[in-house]
Image (tube, rainbow, N blue to C red):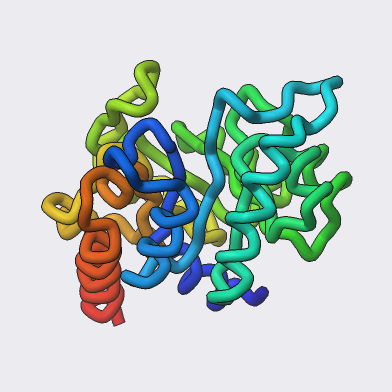
Length: 225
């Protein structure tokens, strides 16, 4: 995947969390609806199932991941796995996203190879520059609007987000509390896209949420041309 292709794939980056789904909606249905509405990349992030270092991948975790991977492959949407490099390798996912306290970008690259997408969480300019140097393909930076799904998330100003996007050559996605109502406020930050959990997957209108997010992000990309 070229850098320009990756930028487009990052525009509406759906990050899963079964805890935010409305009653009666399965994760498979939620991901399908998100993609139908315009999600361009999916990250499978289910913390209670993820493999800890030294452990084997749990069968139920692998089975869920394979079902989500099949949906993504059918629609030609990349699937990344949150933190779990072992699972990403085992199911041949498109890549992995690692945080600051998880396996390093270099370790993930050594395990997964050069053709996989590796994203890194960067909450500061220093972290962003180090991640780029380590070979990250993209950065996830925030929490730009605060977030309920990560209780320890530290808010990031739009000015800091712009500082990071200006300083690195790899794409950056904004994370943290992003919704259809506030996404337009990121227009001048230079981000390639937005990573969204509740703002996409909560409620009954997942496809509509994705459509609105896609339209908003496309609009501020068009304004930057």
